[in-house]
Image (cartoon, rainbow, N blue to C red):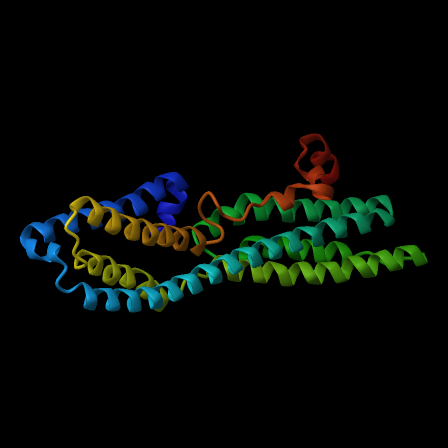
Length: 271
């Protein structure tokens, strides 16, 4: 459900649904409770409610802060892994310039097939939370085969060949890390705490009585808006490859890899 929302709705729409929906529900609940129990406006229980609200709010705030920081760190780590993998492939392409033309063309063709498979085939699957290793497995093996079939002769070729092989091993490791991250999500227990905490804190604000209905609605709405925005961040950051704020495949299309996305040069590299 969350993946569908992220992939089919924009961030602004999600903000309206989550933040706006939370605020409207809180205001409606406050109005209904005040009408049914008008004596709450006298604030007879404000001392007790204030203590409970402050205690629960502090605990819930710590939980939300922990969740959001964790998800933000996960997003940054995912971006670094993607950049490292793309950089590794780009360095292999650069190192292959020291090879004979035929061997360089073979490496370029294998590298082109790999980055195209990542961006065009595997990326849409990762947006849906699927970590399918087989999609790029054959393309990665082709890159290994292109390097293993070459026997460097000169010292320069040997140096660049050794660097290319080392970078290819790094690419394989980063690929596994990327696919692992594609299937990750917030643990169910933290999801329950994030949503359940909101269901506890917001109703508690209804019990804090104020004689001015406008001031009470402002108080309830402000708390609900803060909680709703926090939940929005949790939803948006939970899946690093889904939604508008997801990790981009742009690193596989930039720098030394840009040549594989130009039709004329791509055909030449494959030949």
